[in-house]
Image (cartoon, rainbow, N blue to C red; front, side):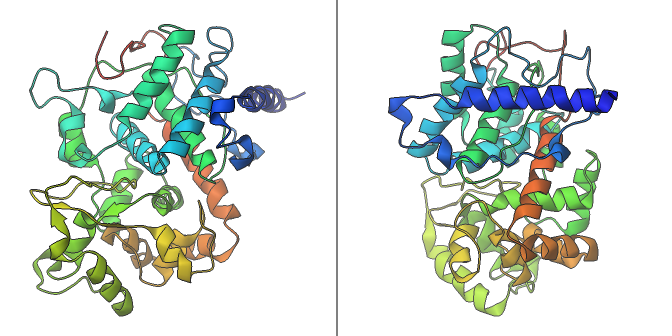
Length: 384
């Protein structure tokens, strides 16, 4: 039997064990059941051995099978309750994962507090000011520490919680590697400079993703994560009247949709309350003012032939000139990404969901620390 087949067989066994461990009974969590989880597994989702830079081979499927065999079940069980209690939690965690992994890899650096009061923590960078979901990571960490003190890293918790949240929100289930370690550093300057902007053009967005090894297709797939969660009017309003100093609205907005956006995101919807939105939108714009209203691609889908959950409404909206962010609509400004948008919007969502899962596996494996590098934090917001 070839090494490839042996590897696939081994991983399949690990995935089956993982899925079985998730089918736990907990009366407190019966409001959200495993029937809500969409198991979509394909051999194409397997990560090739050697495709990830490893320090000593310690990142693997089911890493905690000996040291904390219930880790996956604990994360899943806790996430079931979180998703039931907080409908937008998946979008918040997806954005948190993206902002963590995009800057120097998936090392939980974005979770670190700026306890010294200086500007060194990336959590304090402008693009990260409206990140949410830290409390969910802390809640899961607390449960894991009860069962397996000092074993499961915060970096792994971010990845596992996001994966489970996506599945519980109607998205695909996909296998992820575990065994990440938590970083010692935080990267304020890089977070300021390299998180994609909501007003970024397609060239800049593709450049930032390409620097991390993502193709144009993978970039379009990852941006599809915007189909869940809320976009604060803070990100939308600058497109409506004086876009980039032109004195005119963004010309890429369909005329009928411009009126819809203006009705929701007018200047009068400004408040001192902080509703930064929870969709995985790339970056917080300037904000001395706060907007109390938001828009979602799921609500836009009521007039589109698309399902209510993790579906193709994001891409169908872009085809109609109804992108909420300029950077979203820019996918239609470049032939190659426009073709991907059309492909994802044209079927029942299977192509998008598979590509999204593959891209998420790749993103969650980016720049990981393993072996003796990093640590397993006891509290996710501070170093040991």
